[in-house]
Structures are given as structure tokens and as C-alpha cells.
Length: 135
Picture (cartoon, rainbow, N blue to C red):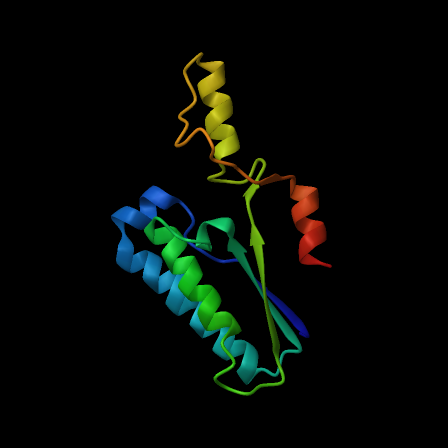
């Protein structure tokens, strides 16, 4: 194995808020464990899949992903393994994505919840996401 892609995470915001220790164990400690395993096994490169929620986080999910990113790219230990982070927005059709949630509300003729009128959502297709990972 030369390249590792670390995509494991608890990503449902409400679950993370209700289960903070599980979110910390998975999104922070799990990431730290994967980083250590990457170094121990002499991998050439390790890529962490992250989220736009890690930028100025306002919930526990975003906070755990931001801390995971810091751990991932920290070069405290000099190593031959190259570490990189890829941040996504919402992947259309992925589990937990806002897109199916919005589609269901529209189908039920219910209003869409808008957090703030100036809020922007970043959407990409699964094909775009895959191309970014393997760039």
C-alpha cells in the first residue's frame, strides 16, 4: 500500500451533538490512530477526507473534523509520509447530505429551512468528488 484515503467519520451533526464522546473517539482519536498507522507502515501518502464544516465550526461535528485536520497535517514527527487534507461540501446523494432532506421537503410541499438568507451551500456530484480524491 502506497496511498491511504481516510474517509471514516461520524458525520451526522445531530448524532455528534447527542453523542459527543463517540464523535471525539471516531473523528479525532480515530484520525490520530490512522495517522500513526500510516507512519508506522511507511506509506508514501495519506489523504484525510474532511468537510467544509471544519472551517469556523459552529457544531461538535465541525469541531471534531477541524481538530482531526490539525492532527493530520501537524508535522511534529518528521516522517517520510506526505499528509494531505481534502475538504468537501455536500456530495449530492450521499448519506446524511442535505440534498435528499430538501428533496423530501419539496415532495411533501413543506418549506425549506433557511439558516440565513446569505448562507451558501457547496454541492458536488459523486463523480466530481471521486475525481478530486484521485487528483
